[in-house]
Image 1 (cartoon, rainbow, N blue to C red):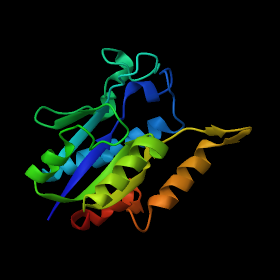
Image 2: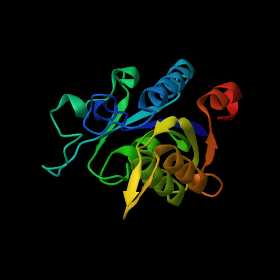
Image 3: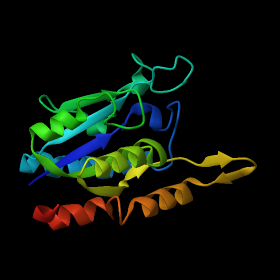
Length: 185
């Protein structure tokens, strides 16, 4: 049984000054960086996911831009896999599944951005593929969403999506809880 850390789309455009700033991105990245340090120290598998938009008018995460680069706080080390994706699901048309299979992973710890989109989609796909999943919810960030005349604030979006994942699709834990639990990750 192997636990792998999957760090989804912690990229510059999601930080202050980027083209799609998320609420809490800096704090989420700091928690993800703590998890990275823990996994690296234990020599457990780490896979980074980088979203590069194919739509020319997307306005963020555009290939070849500084905004699309993985944030320095969680930058991959030599030898760590970077799965490049073009869709919200980190498994779709990427090397993620084959990489996880190659390291024998059966449990994923997930951190990343945006909770309501790529994290949610990837966690549900991982569950469908038979992985046990833990979401480090404080190592994830999202934004306010608008539907019709109503705007749902980012903390409510975050809470709703984590609540929907917790239970059937994943366990939701803080980075500190996961690090404290150590071998039971």
